[in-house]
Image (tube, rainbow, N blue to C red; front, side, top):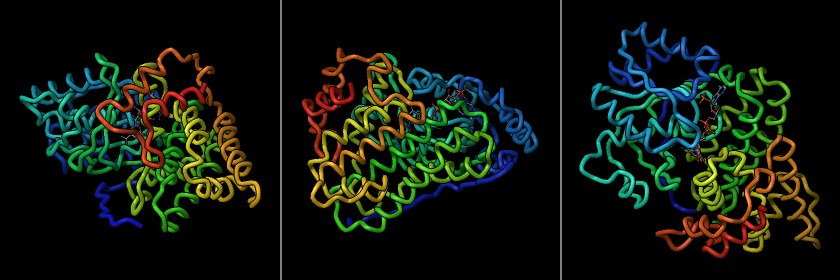
Length: 390
Ligand code: NZQ
Ligand code: ZN
C-alpha cells in the first residue's frame, strides 16, 4: 500500500426532504447567491420551487443562471464569471448533476483568476486554482461524484478539448442528497449515471499497486451494490431505498476514499473524454463503450487482477488452468450488463466510425508522455483501443 493523506471536508446532508434545508446551509456561505442549474428538469420536478422557498426563507438574495448543458461549456463558465463579478455574489449554489456542479466549480475558481489565460494555463497546463467562491450543492443525479470532490471537467466549445482541473478550493462546502429527487430521472440517465459510478470504481480497482486488499474489498462491495441496484432502479424508478443505495454509493465511489493507498488508472475516462469532446455523447454511455475495449487491450499487463475481478465481482468460476477464459468471461459479463441497462457498448451503435480515432488519440497524449497508469497508453495504444470499441 502507498502512503497517503485523506480529507473529505464536504458536509453531506442525506435523506428524505433534505432539499428544504438548503437555505440554512447556504446562509453560512454568504448573502448573495448565484443559483446555477441546467436545462429545466428542476423546474418540471419541483426542486426549483423548493430551493427558492428555502433560500427566501433565509432572506438570501438570488441571482439566477440556468441553462448548463451536459458536457458543460467553457463559454458558459466565462459568462458565469462575468455575472458573479457584476452582481457581486458571495457564493454559488449548484442544483443539478455533474455538469452543473462542474460548471459552478469552474466559475467559482475563475472568479479569482484575472490577467491570466484561464483555459490554457489551468485546463491545458494544469496550474491549480488556489481560491474559489464557496459552493453548495443540491444533487439531482447520482453519477459524477462531483458533489464532494475537487474536480471539474469542462468542454471548450472553441477548441473541442474536454479537460479537467482539480483543487481543494473547489470542493463543495455541503451537498444535499435527497434520493427522492432522483425519481424523475429518465431511464437512460439512470443507466448512464450508474455506469459512471461503476467506472469510478473500476478506475481505482485496476491498479498495479500491491497489498491493497482492504480497498479491493471495499471496491468489490461497491461494484456488487451497483450491479444489484442499477437494474432495480430501472424497474422501480420511484423506490426510495433503491435510489438511496445508488446515491450513497455514487458519492463514496468518487470522494477519494476508495483510491487511497493505491495508484488509480483513469485511462478509460481520458479515452471517453476525447469522444465526448468531439461527439458530445453522454459520459456514462461513452464509458460503457470504452471500458470493455480498454480491458480487452490491457489485461495482459496484470492477468491476476483481471481473474480476481471476473471471479469476485462477476462470479465467474475460477478456472486455474484457463486464466484467459476466466478473464474474458468477466469482461463479457460486464459488457452484457451495460447493454442490458439499455446502453450502447460499441461505437457503431451510436454512429461513430473510425474517422477521428487518430485525432482523438493524438489529443489524448498531447503535452504528456502517456495516459493511464495500469498500462501507459501511447497514441498507438489509444488507436487500437478505439478500434476494439468499434
Ligand atoms: O439539464 P437538466 O434539464 O437538469 O437535465 C439533466 C441532464 O440532461 C438531467 N437530469 C439531472 N437530474 C435530473 C435530470 N432529469 C430529470 N430529473 C432529475 N432529477 O440529466 C442530464 C444529465 O445531467 P448531467 O449533469 O450532465 O449528468 P452527470 O451527473 O452524469 O454529469 C456528467 C458530467 O460530469 C462530468 C462528465 O464528464 C460530464 O461532463 N464528470 C465530472 C466528474 C467530476 N467532476 O468529478 C467526474 C466524472 O467522471 C465526469 O467526468
Ligand atoms: Zn466519470
